[in-house]
Image (cartoon, rainbow, N blue to C red):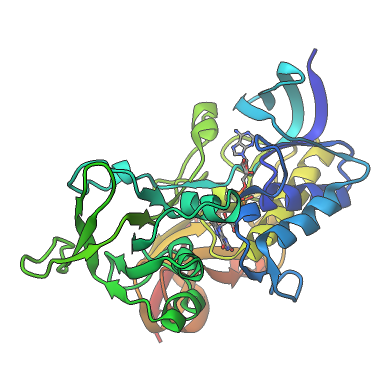
Length: 422
Ligand SMILES: Cc1cc2nc3c(=O)[nH]c(=O)nc-3n(C[C@H](O)[C@H](O)[C@H](O)COP(=O)(O)OP(=O)(O)OC[C@H]3O[C@@H](n4cnc5c(N)ncnc54)[C@H](O)[C@@H]3O)c2cc1C
């Protein structure tokens, strides 16, 4: 028998939980959260360091504390959470198919769906590092889980490839546990992580950050014995003669996160080739009506506080969609093009009639820029110019949108977001 819920949320991480709480506050009557793990909270359960919640709660929490606050809020009437439940598919008609060991295979009919499946780490296979496939090579997240949840140390001497936030945090974590971290090598000329993590996790422990470097060789048949790092040129090819071998037993890879959108793709949701997440409008609605997306499944965030903020908006929009019986906004839908240093924008479509005042437009840049104006233009005419002293790819940027910027836009109008000279 098919069950019915106003809103079905796929994923019980910070995004799914914040969406559920906000949807209930916005009046949704029945909300179902489906989570494949045995507990709620998502990846934050293994992030035991502090630094979470400064924006959202105004205090510094660990990952499990932050997730726990939201898990406590979903308790109570109106929200049902089913852990240990894997969603296998959803369709354009908003049916969700899932499986667990209590109900077996079951389907749920949703008034609206919120996608909150998070992201996973880019695997080593994508990297083409020569050498054998010895033990001792882990993604940074796997090493984080081993240490923080299972109490196991992955190795005694390590090199880390990739300077995303998880790699930086793991450099410090390994050091605390007595593992020597020789270096963090980063292919790009800038770090992919937050400045605060570079200072607190590398500089404070004397761990070198080797920008414009990559791993060119892994030695060892059974277990990693050494990792060779070399400088790269502007074409990102290794420069002969710059190789340096680090004897070690562990290589951690922190080379990017991929939004988990296998289900979305199979359902026919339009996916951005830049973010790997669904393309959404100002209401965080995907190309499938009544299917919303938020958190890391939409685009990779640097701070979970922004995940919660975005997810709460998705929950409110999903509740409004159900309340209005699926009626869409009147008026034009303006495509947003990212250009001139801006890699992508969320949203990628703006319907001015549905735009809440100060709704955030989030984006990332493709390089390090100093003293630039973030320019929002309609049909080439600037409607907003916001000065930024520094922009880096590791830090997500936000522009609070204003409906009045688009008051003269017609059905064929185009919005652009770009970096311009001050
Ligand atoms: C290893 C790792 C470490 C990180 N460390 C930090 C950090 O220190 N600080 C920080 O701010 N951010 C960190 N992040 C980023 C972090 O992911 C986000 O801040 C935040 O957790 C994203 O929330 P989310 O709900 O979108 O995703 P997640 O927390 O990943 O939650 C997604 C949930 O969806 C569930 N799910 C996925 N597919 C299905 C399915 N088919 N059926 C049912 N359930 C499903 C998953 O089990 C998971 O619980 C880290 C990310 C990773 C991968």
